[in-house]
Length: 405
Image (cartoon, rainbow, N blue to C red; front, side, top):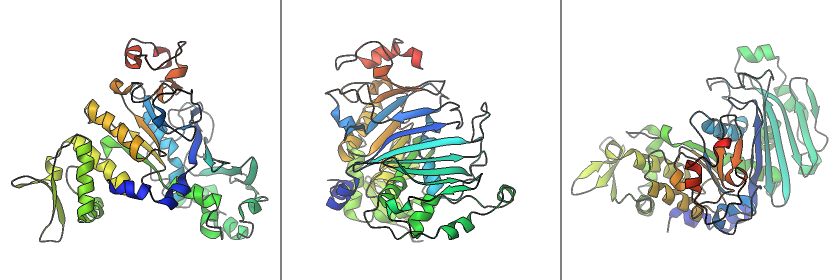
C-alpha cells in the first residue's frame, strides 16, 4: 500500500475534502487568451463508461489536446494564478507579457467558482499589466461578501458577518494598502488581497468556508514535467532524500516506480560530508540522477511534489505530463491518479492520441484547445452522438474535430 493511500484514507481529511471542488474557471485578456476561455467542470454528458473520470457530478480527470503554441501551458498558469495572488508577494518577478498584446483592455479577469458542501463560492479578481490587483470580490451563495476596487478606492465590507468576520480590523487593512500607483512602480509594494488579510487576521471558526477555500487553493499545483527534470541532486531534493531514509517511504517510492513500469531497486547512502545520494541498487551502486532516463526523472518530480507531499493536491495541472513516457506508462499514470486520488481534479495536457480512448477517458473529459483560444470537449466537437464503441483516436486523426483545433 502506498504511503499516500494511508493518508488519503484518513477520515478527517476525507470529510474535509469530500465535496470541495472547482466548478468553473474563466480568464480573459491574459497572455494569448484575448477573449474569455472557460473550463466548466460541471458540463458532463452522462456517459455510463469511464465513470472514474467523474467525481460528485463534476469532471475530475481531464485531458487537453492542442497544436503547439495554442496556450496549454498558459491555461495552466492562468488556472493556478490564484496561488500567487494569495500566497506570494513576488508578482512582479515573473517576466514576459501578462496582458494580451492585441487587447486594449487594461486588466485581465480571473473568475473561480467553487463548490464546498453545497455552498457556491465565487472569487473574482483583475490584474493590471504590472501584475498588481485591480479589484477583488468574493460572493458566497449569491451574496456579495466584500468588494474592493483598488484603482478607484471604492470598498464594500457590509456582509462580512456572513462569514463571521465582521470584527476584523478594516481600518488597519486600508492603511496597509494606501499608496499611489507611481509609488508601487518604484518599490516592491503591491496590493494585499483582502481575502489573504481575512485568513490571517480574522478569528474564524475551524469549519469556516474561508479556511476551507484557503486550504483548497493552497493545495492547487501546476507541474510542467519537461521543466521539472533534473540530472543532479539539488538543495531542493534534500528533504526528499531525508524522507527516503524511512524504509517504508523507500519501499513506497520503489513500488510507485514499479507500477509505472520502471523495474528497479533503490538504495540511499549518506556521504562523508553528510549529504545523501540516491542509487540504483545493483551488484554495485549506480548514481540515480546521473543515470535515470528522462521519463524516470519526470516520475520522480511528480512523486516528490504530489505523492511524497502527503495529502496530494486539491487540483493538479500536469503540463506535458507524458512528454517522456511510453504510451503504456502514460496510461499507468492516468490510472494511478484515478485510483489513488479519485476526488483530486487532475488536468493533463498531451499530444498522445493513444490516450484518446473511451476505455481510459470519455468524450466529455477530452478537450481540444484551439489556436483561437477556445476549449471544446469532444462530445461538443462533432454532430455525431459519441458512444463507447467509437474510436476517438481514429476520428481525431481523420480530421473529425479539425474545425475546433
